[in-house]
Image 1 (cartoon, rainbow over the protein chains, first blue to last red):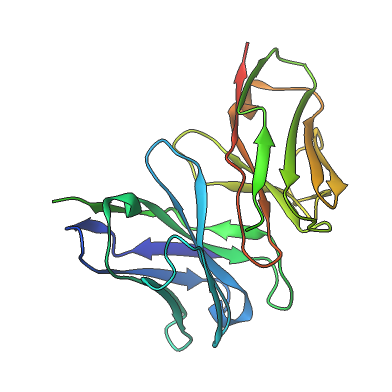
Image 2: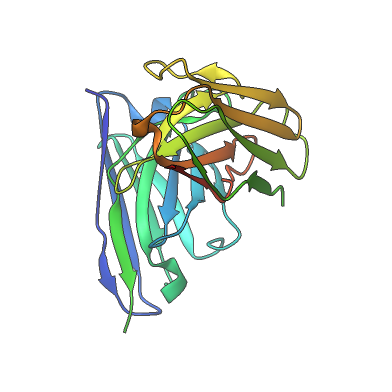
Length: 120
Length: 106
């Protein structure tokens, strides 16, 4: 079964750091473009970051310079390193797979999400 | 930045009604547009990609159209299980989402 499972969420103080992990099964993570999407409580979906190839990444302006997306092919894992966290980063974070690895495409597989709460 | 604007932000319709949601990109995106359905407390689900291609397993009452800057999601006959929030998303360069449209049953 094709599946994504996120972990690493939790409570962190403002200014702190957290690393989210996303374990992929049923497919090879480096065979697809991969992304992170977040959803603040009661709000809409917000795209956070995408990883196209090992060296090609993209970030929303709201997280640029603070968040880093990466992948470990040997573990079939996707990561999101989040630094300088603020209360506005409080959200459920989803990892998602794009349908293709060769061109821009829609997100066909989503994880169940992991909650990040930034609070003192 | 290329913004995605959905309308309406919410709607209420009767079972069996035809429902239309629109999404407008501030710059042309060809057909790099997807629609997602998110039921309360659930993970988003892909409905339509490439503006008009139905994802496998999605009921045929859902359809999408448009190209360039203006797009439409249509539910031909609203069903109780369609109560959800619907999002458009562009996926050329930044994968920006619209703000969502909440669909309720009247």
